[in-house]
Amino acid sequence: QVQLVESGGGLVQPGGSLRLSCAASGSIYRIDATNWYRQAPGKQRDLVATITVIGSTNYADSVKGRFTISRDNAKNTVYLQMNSLKPEDTAVYYCNAVGLRDFRQRFNSWGQGTQVTVSS
Image (tube, rainbow, N blue to C red):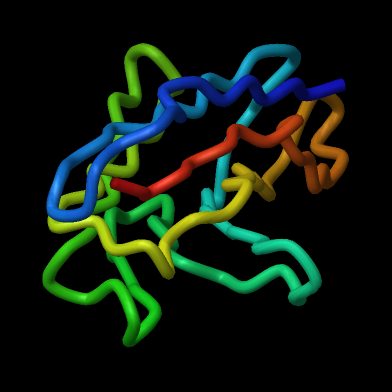
């Protein structure tokens, strides 16, 4: 099994910053991609940012220029730096990772989510 644990959420004022972390553990052979999703109340879960095994990144249009996804391979941790936060960024943020675990079996794991609230 591969476990993902998110941290770093909280309450921040508009214009502020937060950094989310997603730590992966378990029998991991390779993580092909790590994604951050978010889900606001009453809305669908949307993809926010992706980082792949070769380090390429992709962002939703709504966060381009404000959010940055990065990783620390030694720690099996992916970060989401969120700057210039807006009230519409309020949501539960979920980490998702896909790849290969022991015996080269594919995995698709999700974290438990962390709440981000942007409000004055």
